[in-house]
Image 1 (tube, rainbow, N blue to C red):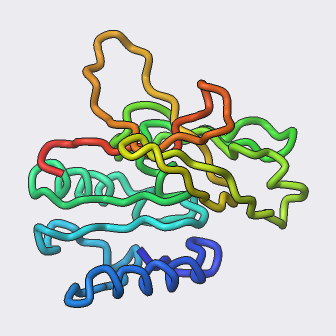
Image 2: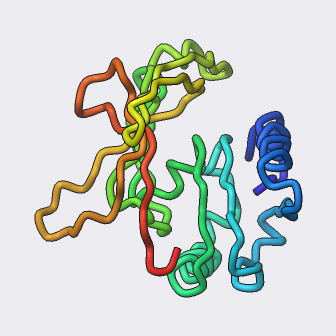
Length: 197
């Protein structure tokens, strides 16, 4: 997703992602789309839709129940995959809670619900010293499968909190945790199954 304006997505990070993908998949086709070009039902079945960093509350397609239902259908029934990064990760949660300084918590439910819990952020509240600035900060991650540690740079990124309902079957796998955070704020990367996708 490339957005339709400067505030929607972080264009610098979209370009970095494209560079990484070109190296990882030299024969792959990379297509950018805007909200008006959003039509996942017609995309190839092996597509990976990448939802990047930005301000997902301004994504027109995400605020359109018909378009979110289309993406949900494309994932569940057609096997399309979604990679949510930053704002994209918040968008994939059943609920996102975001707080800037002492303002009330901004709560959103967007209908994708790939992760049945909450995306809560920012993890590091000092990243928001003023409303116009984000201070990126490196934070250590530990990958669960290999136990290797590395770093991610957060600029408003958050953490995942699973739905504590006893009736919910386990629908996600924790891929990475934040090394130096308390248990309740430690889930950094999750993999979810939604139908075929």
